[in-house]
Length: 282
Image (cartoon, rainbow, N blue to C red; front, side):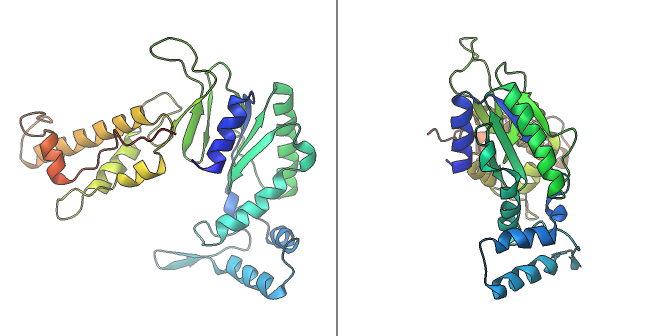
């Protein structure tokens, strides 16, 4: 379990159920070079290292053979960009605000976990003021305050969705812990399959030779913890259906033809990776 994931679950389960969900507009390209180098210089005094970092920031990234650079920010996808963005993001919060809430963040993803609505409102105002000082722009619709207590809302962080849910068996809240599952293929936490994401999973299974490759294994490695079983099952079902329909159309047949043709053995021969059954419980 990652430290960030453990930290947010520990805080929420401990009573911090008012959450400020933070979303920045064009975060990586908005970082002010002067401010960023000033923050780095607080810890690093070697001019040669600072010069190297400055050159790294100006180097840009190459996409489709074209080098893309900018006068501001760090290139998203650059090898040093996550480190520099974390240095920049460290200035978003101050020690004197620790009694208001706990910030959990990585690069441009951040949550501020508070124990009351008043604290969440205060943290939100602090965030707005600090972001302006750092030349960052908050997304007006995606930066919001969410109350996790009643289960009506959830928050996203580092590819996971965090929400209080009711037990399907006992029809009560799963206290004291919140449920956490991959946001991959999620539509606002309502359990609907994102067809675009599933299609990309299906494409990852196929190669030009027709043999299916275990591309979904990467999803299983990214999201093996938490309450991922239902989402894994949804992705498996959709991928199998798309592959079955693709094969039927290729052979001028109709329907998925479950059982007689597209059975478990057929998918096994193709090498289709199954996500179901791979969840690990701490």
